Length: 155
Image 1 (cartoon, rainbow, N blue to C red):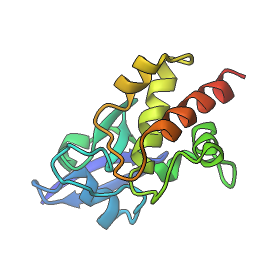
Image 2: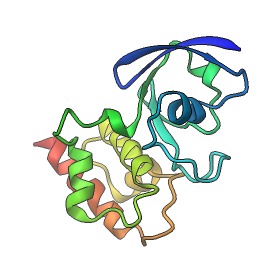
Image 3: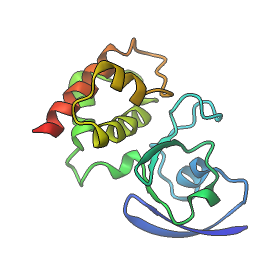
C-alpha cells in the first residue's frame, strides 16, 4: 500500500492505496463520489474526466499515486451548495444530455475549456471536448450547452 494526500473538491484526504489503483477507483470506491463514471477503462471515452490541477484528465488512466499532492475537482465539486455552476445550468437548460452517463465528463471538460477561453469558436469547442464521447446525442445540444455556458460566464 502507498500513502497519498490529495485534495478533492476542496477537502483534504490522506489515503492508503494500492500502487496500481486508478484515480477513478479511489474517487468512486474510497471517497464515494460516484458522479465520475467508468466507461471504457482505457482513457478513450471521457466519462471518467475530472479536473486535476486545472487540466481535464481521464481518471481511469491516472494512477492514484500520480495524484499525490494534487488538487482534484469532480462533478460533485462544481456546485456551491444548491447553486449549480453556470456550465451545469447551461447543460440543464439546453438539454445537453440524454442518459447523463457522459455528462459529468462533458461538463468538466467544458469548464476547463471556458476557464481558458470565454468565447470559444466551434473549433475550440471541438478541441475542448475531444476525447469525450456521447453515445446518445448528435452533439448539437452539447455544443449549444457549451455556447450557453460561455455566455453565462461572460456576464
